[in-house]
Length: 609
Image 1 (cartoon, one colour):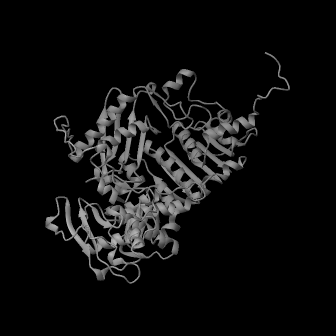
Image 2 (cartoon, one colour):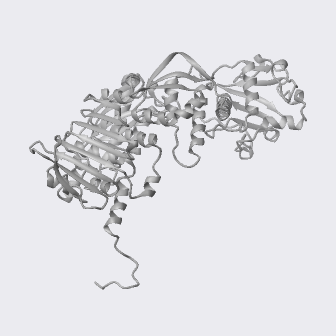
Image 3 (tube, one colour):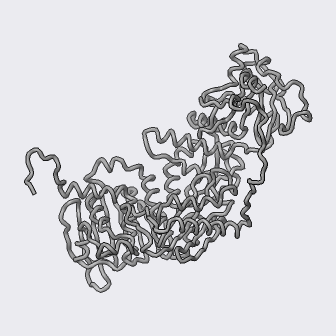
């Protein structure tokens, strides 16, 4: 091996630098510390874990357990990189039954914080105090303490100011911590778990069954929507709960996979759970699920990523099929649904009675969200509102309209004003299950009534919020809801915006919230469900995060309050909806980017004849 020269550019990193780089893979934020510490406590045989936080973990994180504890020598050695009691040779990696095994958690945490460990074994009369700060050598001395371990992590990322700067708000970090606590608590319902923040207890869980643990975390309402799942095979055992068809949500569905007591993310298995719900629930709705898989330890590989939440299965396709069948069976048994296979092979082809099909243009869809075909009318007629709406449908009577058109309506001239003091008659047809067809100077417009109403309400809520003019409608009887620990932290983060929209909420502690008032226009909505969906619209990244969050809140409120497809509107309501949509700043699309109307212009009409 030749000696290095002055021209060499590859150098060995100092231990202090390499340790901080390695720590970045394991310790990403305060929640990472809580996760690693709680998993170490479980590996130590703890039956009770207490987490105490100051400033959402920025200032201090304490994790106290009643596990087996450590000797003086082990307590010091545990802070050395790759020191572990979980494995002894390479083959052990493929038959793991513990959470930790890399020997990276403690040294990584110590590399970016100030750590203090108090620990004692039951056989020892005196415990051990170990203190480590960054790259400094650990100090050790005897101390009086109970059996188990008491870790204190202070000033996280004190020596990595760039990493500390990118931590989010206290409530966001607290929400992330509570998500990790939820995962550990669900995987081990036999554990007693408590969490304290700023001197107040925010979570207290006693040893319980899986179902009791789910209800304890996510509220009594969850109990009414849980369907049990249970399947035993030689390859995998599946147990747990899925939500009923009535328990699906657009946002905020609680979805958890566990394998051999370890939380995991698995998009492939996620599809196995969603597939049985297809065609049974509205598009965009997703079920909650709490599913526990048990497989032989040597058939999975957890050594893929430092977070240990990505797991490779030896028989992935087989597990997918078993999981899918188990969910199908649970829905069929408890919801009374059956599988229906449609015979598409026996259905005759229906020819298209159009010549030169390739030359027929499709109806125009505006991709400019600010495009407003209604305004073209007044511009071309110079304010002559009476002539704005072409009498395209003539004097057709309702009973003469072809199948599919429900009725013909018009707005009385004295009911609607346009362009100042001008009055005019507005004609339209209702078609199908919620479409409005009306003429304009540009051609024929087909409007999705629900999406149009969503857009109108969205702009109204946003305008009221920004002008500080949102009105609140008090409830005669306050509605009580129970939030999960992570959602309760999100509520505190978003309370200012919710109040500005017109919500009157009272935090009753331990996730209980009293809804005493809601924004005007939301009467009759499922307030608890809507509030949980709003909480999950939070976006905590970027300089414009608050603006995006407000818009997503308004979008969720509008979606909850808008008319549904198939709802019957009066002639006056239809005409007012068209008028309100006409006044919107961006009438072509909803806030989520969905098309609101289709315009068929004169050229398109001519091409069809």
